[in-house]
Amino acid sequence: MTIIQIGSYSLTKDRIDGGVEASIQGLVNELKIEHKVIIFDLPRHNIESDYIDIWDNLPIYRFASLSSNNFGALKRAKEYAKKIKLLKPDICHIHGTGYMQIIVYLFLRKLKFPVILTVHGLQHIEKRNEWINKKTFKSLLKYLLLSFCEFAIITLAPLIIVDTQYVKNELLKYKRSGKVFRLPEIKVIPQGINSIYFNLKDNFNINNTLLSVGALNKRKGHLELINALSLVKAKITELKVYIVGFISDFEYYEELKKRINELHLDDNVFVCTNVSNIELLDYYKKSCIFVLHSKEESQGIVLCEAMACGMPIICTNSGGIPDVVSENLNGLLSDFGDVETFANNIVKVLTNNELYDKILANNKQTSFKYNWKVISAEVLKSYTEVVKSYK
Image 1 (cartoon, rainbow, N blue to C red):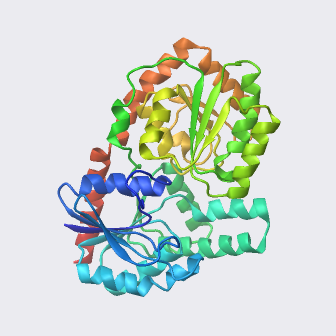
Image 2: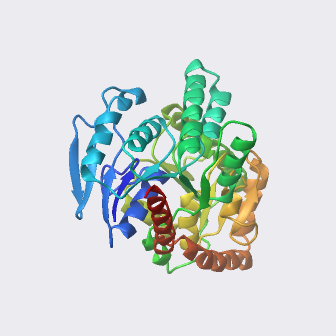
Image 3: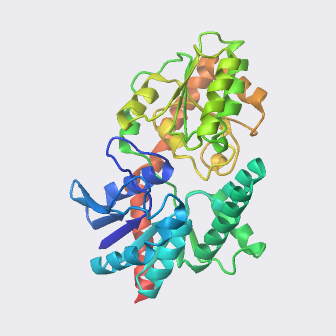
């Protein structure tokens, strides 16, 4: 089978920015063992011209955007689809529900290629929250346009893959509220994790070192995490925390640094950006607990990575997180914004060896369901169904 994957793909081998890039890469690494896989990266502002990367016999088509904004990429959509046509794929797998994805989908539908869609996060919810926080015309426009794109491609797609029951339930709400006219078949297939995480750690001890991984923006709740860490430090002075992620909101990044300084946490909390894949693994190795105070997650691949490492998880019960993390089984949960409970949960795990060991064992066991070998087999079944429906 010739499979074209359409979505954001890492520009360099040594670094992955975000869950979508990690998801596509993990899926591709399994599929290419027995199938011909081709990547069509989304147009980017930071490359000057189109080119083709070849990584371990995997062709990656790179496209330059024609302007500095996302609408410039849309001008490439027709050309993008024509290149796909020349490759004669058996199926195209679109990742995401943005501007480019809906336009490319319409071109591919016109060309009668089988297409399947994976919803990565819910743009309507994420952009609505951004607009509520910022209340600017730009954030309102982005919210309206991306919501329309999401509703349109969900309505048109023949089959949709989502990573948690939470996302499926939200799509069902879209239908009930009239935001989409129809819903195709929806399959819940989780995102997998790199196999290296399953055997990454062989030394487990409570060393008061915490790790948080996620893009540096308001949705990930790093500011609330820092406020919680101030409360933790009052009880556990020997505390070290690494916040690792790429900067997607520079103003928020500056706010984080300022808050760390105001709370006198400069010797305890370290914000690490531009981290390579190898460096990230080292942060997982030397940390004992994973923390994430996110406002909204569809699944949270980083939570599954932490599980594979055996790390207890302290996080919020937002979005699809409870579909991944069960209270007292894989970690401890609290509401977004409940900084005091979040801090108490960290202290509880750091000061209770029995609880720590129990969650560690549960997480090592639970994590195996996020093995890409298992997940890619389910995705392939979906490909076969869609291809048959087009014949």
